[in-house]
Length: 330
Image 1 (cartoon, rainbow, N blue to C red):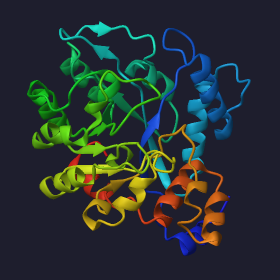
Image 2 (image 1 turned 180 degrees about the horizontal axis):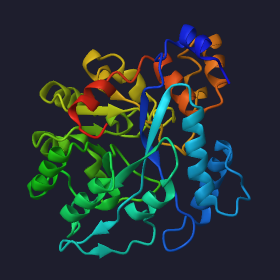
Image 3 (image 1 turned 45 degrees about the vertical axis):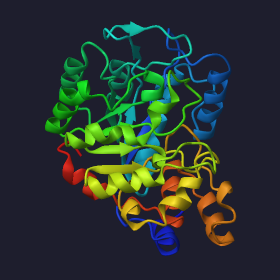
């Protein structure tokens, strides 16, 4: 593992263990929400990359324990927010069964991270569910520090006025909202247009600190067209932020080069890894000096490697302090 002094001098990363990873996934194995088939094999391969024993008797527990270990061993990351995934609901707020949709209930997340140092509870609440307001109160009481939604997959439009009371209560509770941006292919989608960050204005207007995940990008490689929307939201709302989750993947990396050209957007960046997805340095072989790229690739801890890479590419977590000043549970 690289020493703090070495990394500070070469990469100018934060000097203290103060960074929060706002975007980490819980995983479930077994039961109706099991990660099975090709998707399960792919994720198990990712777990091996993280150092999770492939033959662990309880792979689910081993994964979350490994996350805790990596946070505790991280030089710069003090905690990781781990969230599940709520399901899809019909117009009456009743659950809709979708075979391809992986759901991870909030109760399961809480059970998975119970007693694990460095892991925080991130709730997932589809505001279209009939008991969304009650679930929000339950999750807040259980210690949630953020609410995460994936509109494409969960099949709801975050811009709808009917969700204003839900957003208003979130603002009162000091809970930020993390929203998937762009296309979603792994989990499937009811409507890909629901990932448009322009739809976030309803929540922003109600005072919620909103984080557009994945840099606010489309996820379509070089075919990015969201920058004007992101700039407009950042100019209009001090409570608008973006995260770095999955920006090391080839389909998302274009946003790195777009965001770093705009000081206002750079100042709204918060840190997210999207673990267990890999933290890749190779796609930036032509963007960093060879020596610096080698130093980053040698960092074993994925939290530190992702942070060092974002800092090296000009996207430090400058928005973390402004975000945490807006919320009560940071």
